Amino acid sequence: MDLSIPWKNTERTFIIAEIGQNHQGDINIAKQLIKAAKEFGADCAKFQKTNLQEKFNIAALKRPYPSIHSFGKTYGEHKARLEFTENNFKDLQNYAREIGILFTASAMDSKSLSFLVELDVPFIKIGSGDANNFSLIEKAAETNIPLIISTGMQSFATVKEIYHIVSKYHKNFALLHCISAYPAPLEDINLNVINLFKSEFPDITIGYSGHELGTHISTAAVALGCKIIERHLTLDKKQKGSDHACSLEPEELQELVSNIRTLEIAMGKPTKAMRFSEELCYEKLGKSLVYAKPLKEGYKLGFNDLITKVAEPKGIDGSEIRKIVGKILAKDVLEDESVLKEHLL
Figure 1 (cartoon, rainbow, N blue to C red):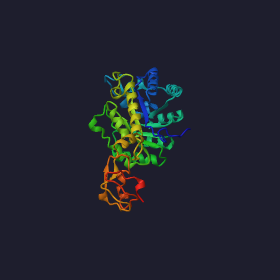
Figure 2 (cartoon, rainbow, N blue to C red):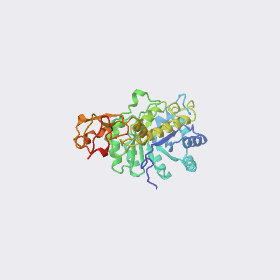
Figure 3 (cartoon, one colour):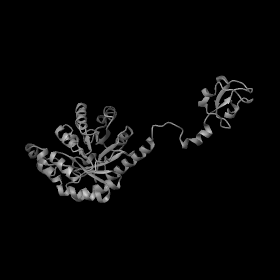
């Protein structure tokens, strides 16, 4: 099994297109979504794998589900209509491999976790709905497969418990800040939680799973240091299903990826120095030291003998004044003359 971690050892943000169940239970739509994820710049196409009897109790499956988004009379019938078989998943994995995009899924229960392990996916996602399912999280951690865990609907105490459970086995996991509302109201997103996670969990990767409308909030999460971004993908926001409204259509995914890649270039590295592109401006407007008055050879320079101006020729940079004070002149100099290295002993 390849235990390499897709989001590590790279400067690029790892972008997940969460297809989830936006495929409407149609394998061909699922493949169209995988293709769109690949064509518009995502690194991974992700689905959801559920064993209904493992995830839901009997009463939950029998509950009437009269929603406009329903694919069945009961919630169980609805979920069954949207659930792919194991063979379907193998087919989708093969298709993703053929077109060159990573494929994985959220494990919604223990049996689905075991299946995804057998499928040899590059990582396993634990969704927000299972972030308090410590038994499932521990079983997932025991596999030593890299994990991405969303933290919607959870307290910070629960998030810390997730961290401690997985850390007993490895540090090949990421925590995603997430608000489980579809769409998420801006006032509830609290991107500053990303800074909290980075401070509390400095030895793992922090990311963001967004359910807000648009792309700018997810781009901002990258500016705050997120190395993983997950967004739902749909072919049409008007399709039946509760996730479509907060999903990105392919062109929006392309916009998000483009904005993130542009931001990554602009973020650069924490190195402050004059850049190559600034040199022309410096030659034109950068200020140099000049002499405040005529001075004789052998004179010892003081602060009051020097002024900072735009000067021709370009002299010693104004920031060097403290290094120049106390130097001895090697020749006579004129008022307003640029201070040059060859003037000094």
